[in-house]
Length: 111
Image 1: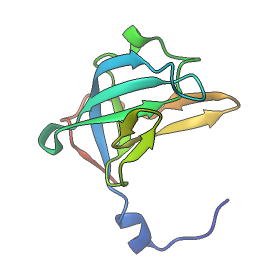
Image 2 (image 1 turned 90 degrees about the vertical axis):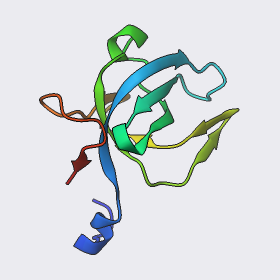
Image 3 (image 1 turned 180 degrees about the vertical axis):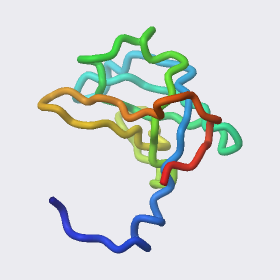
Image 4 (image 1 turned 135 degrees about the vertical axis):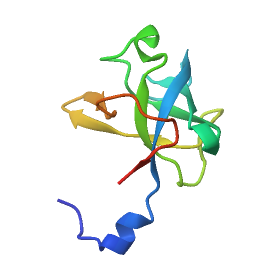
């Protein structure tokens, strides 16, 4: 377990639901990854790099809802600018995406 944080620390993290609307290979990444374009409703469209190629094919990801942190600063990854962090459970070398059990409005807050 990492350091203990306060509830106030947790409330600073903006977790939202979005829908993946584009998926592209990312051959320039150090580890196998996809470039994702995600619709967060009123928050707009954001891009992310995700190392999820072992369990997910590109077609399986299209129109899939995910959970992401949307208030981190942008991060340059090779020639790609990542604007959010898609969340997943790490199981060995595999990442299993976190998602709502039923479809919700894009941009919905996760708390």
